[in-house]
Length: 311
Image (cartoon, rainbow, N blue to C red; front, side):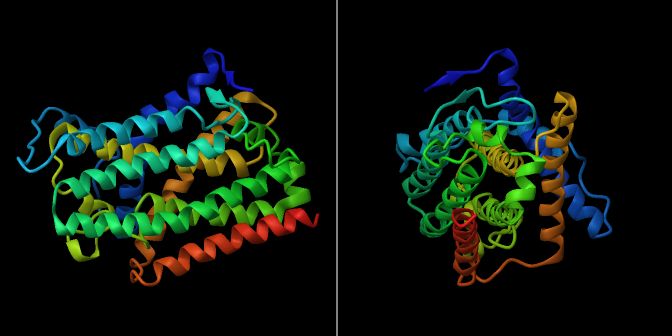
């Protein structure tokens, strides 16, 4: 049954909308500290978004409405996905049986319009990036869904629920004692999915300018001004949502609401630091190795599901 949360229930979405760009700043600062540099300010992503929103957009005469609609629909779909992810002591603003499937396909809708806008530009480079994005997404979705199914079976005992809020409410210390290995496998699988879906190293390098190796960045080369701001903000929001999803289905609930909130927010920020450390300690993989990484994430999700079925 569809349920609408109360006033406090909208706080997970509010936190996501307000603090998503902060994760990018934290990742960049972590990389700077590991590299022995001063680095940009933590709030630099907010300044970048403000600057882009104040500029005008440039459109090629060869593009259609698809190119202009791409950033808007992408951001709208990602914001809608934010309404389905719980955090801390609160459930998601909207939750119902099967909402995890809707969450996955809202992200898929955002990806579709990003790729469609890239193809509408008529650039061979952007088409190449769109092809890579779609191929890797087909390998990232199975571990995402299978991992969440494993947590659903372990937490609520009924994978047919597929309710992110229900799963979140049943993750506890006792669950870790009973199904700790299952949750560990799911956490690693979802983290690998996060790196792929958010185009982070070792799957993609968000700071590269070499078109032949770019995936996400090459698809948005022709966007400018507010459109590019929508894309950057949508990417930051997607990073926050996947981080919050990992935290909500893996980190045990605390007995005190504010302690629960502090642990959840701290865990999301800690994941950003981990991403920064990963990007500082290794180079991006060769493109032929990325499918192997995502298949490995799928194997971990399947193992988690098999372990839960036999416990």
